[in-house]
Length: 349
Image 1 (cartoon, rainbow, N blue to C red):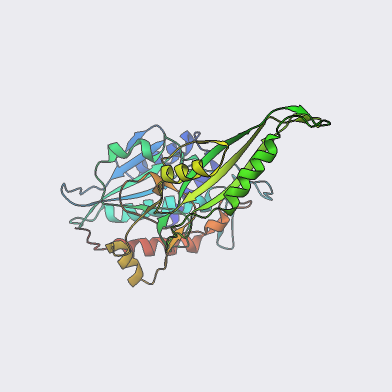
Image 2 (spheres, rainbow, N blue to C red; image 1 turned 45 degrees about the vertical axis):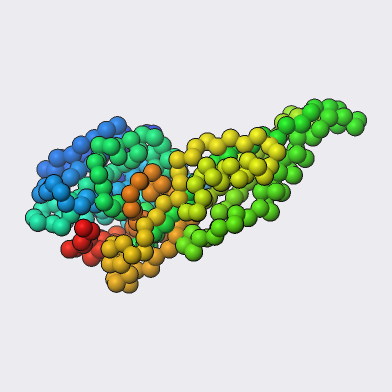
């Protein structure tokens, strides 16, 4: 795994914030060129098919992302310096999701030279995952063709996320009437918003998932007012909604639209809940290997994948987006072994 650790170091050195992943994409492509592996590309996305591709076989997609968030406040070391100390690799994107990205590439390369596989493989290193962007994985799905199964590399401590909550962001606006704060004038939009926010806080969606739990709503931003002596006529607030498999984002919006008086506009309906049946062959293989399965509260590229998928990878989600991000080299090595065990002789058809 040494050359894949070196690849991860090269990726850490190159800033790759969402929508600015060009240099990181070039690092991946140069590695493939040096490995004499042909690839396809579109914008900052890169993908490759296994050498002994056989038409008619099920196709497994191995996917992870090359973009990162901005460095968090509180870094005590250079986020772009891939330092190794006592077997731990530090650096922005090392855990989320560089460890998964290079480990899945190592897995692809392992199987790439194997003839008579029971499946075909596509490895895809994609962009804009951190912002759920339209120029990431979703932009190349039609290029990839029919897929039977996707393995999405994210830090899960190599446990299987077999379901993932959807994400919907609502921009809400409460309307009042301006007036002088010293007199009994106007209708305070803040108070109207507070009433709606309390309704949201108290409301529970009826259907609760055994894997994903209940639909979760959080008011995360609020803004109103211009000066101390003016009753505000507008108050805006933002609601973060995480849906389970029983409600599409549009269904959840329709329910909430009837609940509150404020105007409510969804930014998008497209990031719905996703998952895979417990009886699926790869989940059953994982269970036999002693892996646990769970429902993930966080969103990944699973949300835009329209076929069965699991999310699994080395590292720990709790380290993502934190200062002094890191992953241990032993986690990457163990992840490689588990991925290989999951896929060896896997029968999907």
